[in-house]
Length: 317
Image (tube, rainbow, N blue to C red; front, top):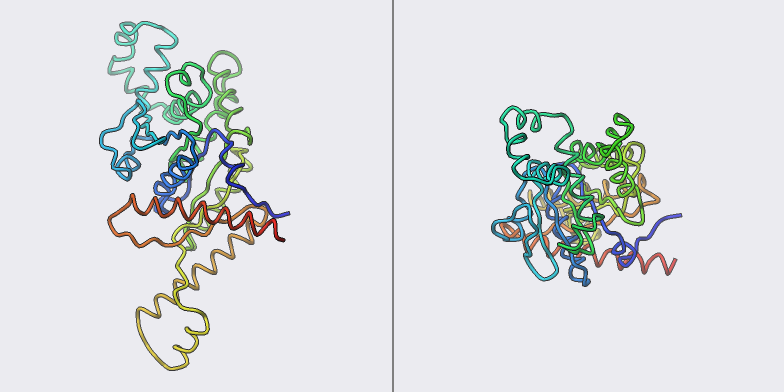
């Protein structure tokens, strides 16, 4: 049976994670999802990881750091820096700043922390867990929904599977307990959802198919709607295109338009066939040159409208 997501059901989750191949508009889509949820009355926190600042730039937010900053009504941003997350975690254990400074500000210890495999991912996902689940964090910053602009597919998968690596490697102790709690959150479909973003092109679609398989087999997480971004609009009807073609009119722009339109249709159908039990949202190519905020606003409206349309269609079937 084909699944039809309703907006109200999606908004009941506490954590949305947005990933996809680099260059598919993932950050714009994460911002769009955050704005859509905020417009529905939820208090939303957008999360950037791995030292990126694209979300803050897109939302024209100015300086944003490790503490959440409100950028518009019901919408805030935080940038998770591994070093600050590490300091916060250690201080929770040792309690005293001077102990942290004397031990962990040592340059050799810092090099070890920065170079330890998987530590950045573990600290990042640990902070995300704390924002959703930890009572002390909830008292300081209460949010109905956390939207994570996760790294592109390869690094994104590492972020979502590092807790399992730790659980398998460390059998007892506080690190095992924390990693298990992170897994419980990520794999709880009532709380967490992954949004997979792609484009109507061969490589992004193939990577989305591969990522979906890994999300199921390795991360074991719930996959929400697939976000097919930058679908070319049908400006001319098929009979009009055939009439122009039959008249022998040759125009490079028209040829490009028809080629990209057919390409969009082809890969949209490929995704629908592959994700038959999921839901593919076809989002239009938005022409807003050098206005990323306007692009995100248009995408937010398009996501909401497509969800409404598909829910209505499912009811009428």
